[in-house]
Image 1: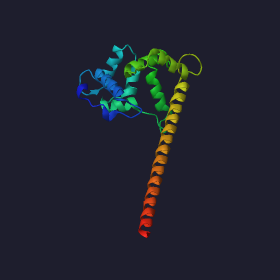
Image 2: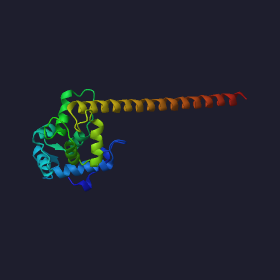
Image 3: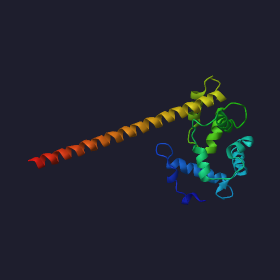
Image 4: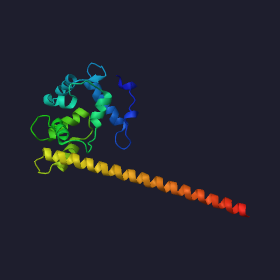
Length: 197
């Protein structure tokens, strides 16, 4: 599937995912899709990981399972958000993807590997700053508790922001309707007054 005929617009999410980010994901997908079949499988993903020097043998099945996936599914998996229904095992599965050398922690190198795979634009300095911010014990690595806390707090903050935006939209709509109702009442009053003259 050639990227030149690919329309990124349907994948964009205002304020979250830009056209440029969708195109980056599509380029990454196309690079992994070595046979240009429009789907990727564990073998192709393994080949991409090896080419990037990333040991991911045990994590490929966590990421893909045994299925071949098309770009739509790849996009969903790359942009999936946590929800309250996600279990600790789901979060630990994500942790294992980051911990691609199976040390039990996520290091700076692990984060750089994931950034390379997904085509992230963050510089090494920005990745280090993220790691330092999330690391609670100062060992410059994320343990499962750091990772879990980060994801759960991120989900909570995102949900609170979504609730705030929904309330703001509802308040705005209510105010608009009240204004329209007052305007309609004023016009009825003016019509009644002009008829009474």
